Length: 273
Image (cartoon, rainbow, N blue to C red; front, side):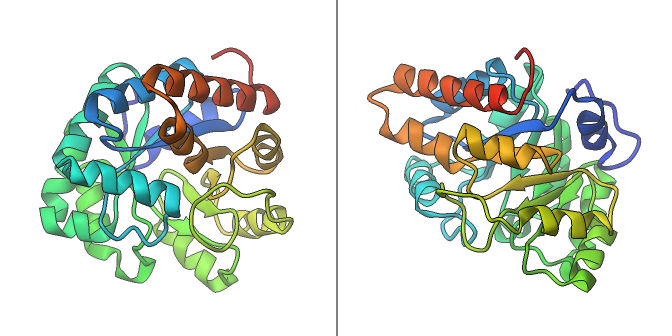
């Protein structure tokens, strides 16, 4: 379903980063928010704004890594009856339209479905990888085997507080790219990026050749430009979800999303869209 053929899990994602003209702009959306049809429109707006890779979150009742904006959107989606299968269907639709897609899912969701069935569903819908924010590398054997069997990359988080030994362990099991947390805490817009981020990324690069994508807190073009000077990908989530939540209607939200992503691309020095 995707144009990127993979010979092993993560190959398609690594190639996507490698062949890009610069760091990838990676916008995030809550699956099924504010409703499935509107979510698909939002993802299309991401593509039209030049997104290199889209991240789609499966709503979860207790999203420990997420701040209030994404938590609130997840609750709206859950109250509407959005389930993992609905999000997978949205992922398949946007993948068919040319998007490169990764999912974000908490561990309990995957275990409830069954790792084999979950990753088979991902593969059949063109999903290149799955970010599991609450999965420690020490407990990843079963999920990693299930993901690899379906040629889906299992994507891990790394934080600035991680020791070198921890970063080495994460790098040993990672595939596709590593999701780098810009600062401690949950997702959400911040006024500035942690000054220690470049040193953290440099430390992690000593342990891996995988692309490094930075998320948690990137909300302005200036921040996107700063992060893009050190990372291979810039993940933008809460700022976009908040624009949709505060908009007077879907069209207004789509315009706001397009404008912010376009400003970010320009600040990052990316040409075209």
